Length: 318
RNA sequence: UGCCAUCUUGUUUCCC
Image (cartoon, rainbow, N blue to C red; front, side, top):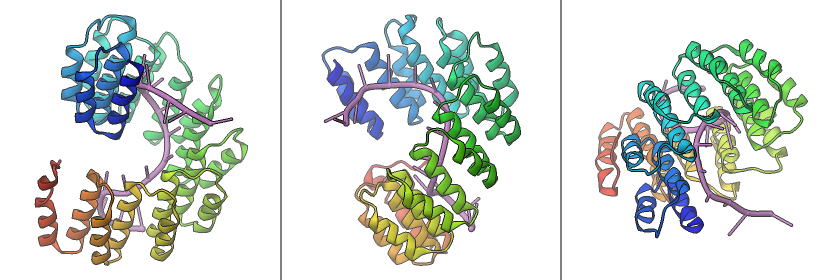
């Protein structure tokens, strides 16, 4: 079952829910983990109808081990902004764990209901470090950076994510100096911390600092590479962006999409289209950037033509 | 020196 679960999880993570479901249906026996993988796979990709339908037929929903599937659904509805459904599930579930509370808290916070988020945080019988990190994020998300910092200072212990959330909070509000102070103080940094800094400085137009941090990074994942591409592109350095793109050891689809956007904005539609055609595997955003790139350039006829070819490749416009 | 699952942090999809 373990190996089958891994396979289902692998497909689900890729967003290939059809294949995930096929394995799910065909495997010899499912465990609670299998169900959680499949339900959360749907939920994380915005397919809440499928997630809820599958959850309906899940056995032993009242068992404590089923809370992960409940939580996945709650988080999914929260992300979609369907707080009513999220809350209904939260109220209905027989055994709530901390992640259940954190899921509903995040749901409210991400949809502008900061007071509800705070009340639930206070109402929870216990909080873990994720709860605290979620509250930092909640305040940051709702433009309350000082309160976010208050939570950060007050919380009982901090992990790398705590530091990352707080640093990102400052960066997202353009407060580079406090961000840098925390960055320098942070006991442990990871790729997320550094990438956030690269992006934050680039957004503020400090490309030299941005690229210096990027080049100093030991581990550059595909997000980091993409951030550097975007950093150059958004500051008008298309050639440098292309150079980073060429240098990247592994280009994921987001890097391609960024280059398409960059070229389109630069007026080089030919190059944009050429790259679009060369993408190893297109995702939803690839189509979106290509269509809007053409549309922005006044080539609405071409945009419509690309749009019409969506379904030919099995895509459904959203 | 590789990971079966839920909740919190960085990137591409108006402008910058």
